[in-house]
Length: 203
Image 1: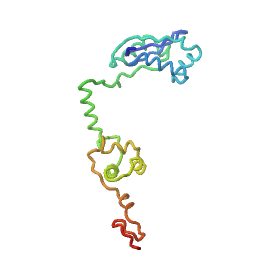
Image 2 (image 1 turned 120 degrees about the vertical axis):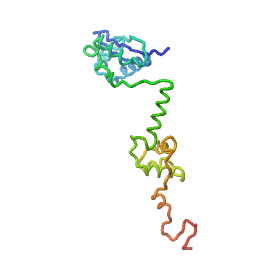
Image 3 (image 1 turned 120 degrees about the horizontal axis):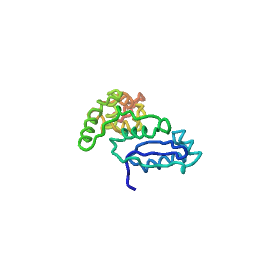
Image 4 (image 1 turned 180 degrees about the horizontal axis):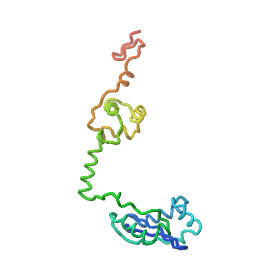
């Protein structure tokens, strides 16, 4: 079935209440509604109550307007007002068009992606609160030891996926620094044995 993107309307036939929405695949969205309503997991309590009482035959689903994604919220608002879907329907509010994100495509999208990747990668990532020293130590352990990434992650209290990305697609310009704890952990303990030379001094 061909994908249809645009604005849809769900009508509760018993009293005319409607739910207006938008989707990039309208038929699939209706299937999702039915699955949630049948399993009693739909978040809209009022619509769920009506469905439980009268079943899916009491609801009509239809496409109001095929449109591009750039028009979704504006047109959804138009139809919410037209059908009074907040006061006499299942919608709770109008979309805030002032917060609508710009939708990029083609070369503009690719250039923007590269720009965002550059300014948010590695130590430029404003969301990364990790001490750079920890990143350097993890990088060294990955490059110079046989420690498993899951063990490194556990030692530093990080997720394995976080450790995996260091030196791969994040912080690839950071040089590794040997952790002091690793150095000490591998020194010979004073049991009379020089592990560096492999000589047992007690022999």
